[in-house]
Length: 458
Ligand SMILES: Cc1cc2nc3c(=O)[nH]c(=O)nc-3n(C[C@H](O)[C@H](O)[C@H](O)COP(=O)(O)OP(=O)(O)OC[C@H]3O[C@@H](n4cnc5c(N)ncnc54)[C@H](O)[C@@H]3O)c2cc1C
Image (cartoon, rainbow, N blue to C red):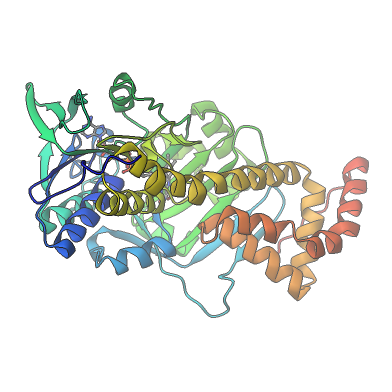
């Protein structure tokens, strides 16, 4: 039975551990909900990073693409990203396999999607930005403006109360303490804070993670504009080392992102940069590594176990997040579900299970199952180069409208994250599409067996 005695009241205190996107979104929703209900809640965000600095410690390392669905959600919340934080307005996507490339278009003809790229910290290492470019710093200042209090510095320990009516104690700074009615874990996947939550013994286990790689290479604004024309390049080679890679223009910088089936480290990065297709798209090759900002952040590849308890909820990357895509949108969605739950149902573990955990698992984690299927199948097909080539050529070069449109929509939705993985799965494995592609699949198989290679640009 839900414990109705534990709920937010006038004067309640919410402590948020982490001032990245999920922490800021939670603060924003909570302050709005409180205003709507005519009560005052105190919201304190603890954040260990100074996002204005240009170094790794100041950055929530990510490629920094804000997709259209997220931009719409930010609009809805009245969160307008200042122009100084926007590094590029993305025009479209180029999709590269080992043998072909194609331009992906928005499935709705004529629609120009609003997709932007941002820096999460104060810019790449050694950059000297004239303005405060950090997206995360902007979000933190935004919620401060809404009434949240920000405490600089890390939370060191958390003590649960002996009974559900008691408060949670957070220990920070030089042993200072804060008592909270609700603690929100928004600490991401790249700090050891998960251990603090695990040590509390309520059952929390952080999500499994994989090491990825991000390189910010300073190639100069003119070079980037001329070569990439504000397009994101996506590489899907179907190799064991790199599942997907991307080039994202960001002002003077090109951000190279790599996600693998296993942890990525320097040899995989070098191998990717030396691939002939990549060398064509980035003539500097491994030279870009000479004077660049490189990091190997972790990405969650599954949900956390038990990300809730009485007076405690874990959101964003540390809780439940979409695999490989739209992490910031997941941060938004989990923060939204969790805030609605604590205001509408209360702070008990039963309320958080029914109102937050179960819907978030249904919305995000179950869909990740289809994501894994899509990536596995794509990887398998992409590794059979002739088969993939024949299929793409048939669909695009012959401009068989229904097939080309379907394939374009599926790939667009896959690279932008505009649709659920389940939808992408249904689009890619539509029986009519697969049936139409059967003859060319067989032709590709024969070519592959005979070692006959055809190369075409689509
Ligand atoms: C290679 C790569 C590329 C990505 N590209 C994209 C992309 O293009 N678009 C996209 O939407 N998402 C992308 N993501 C995912 C995205 O970065 C995350 O999903 C998102 O940042 C999660 O937000 P969060 O607030 O949950 O966690 P984080 O952004 O990690 O924020 C957690 C915050 O908590 C703070 N913190 C941790 N412990 C403590 C403590 N004890 N006390 C105080 N503060 C603490 C940290 O300093 C940090 O600021 C990418 C991720 C990777 C790895």
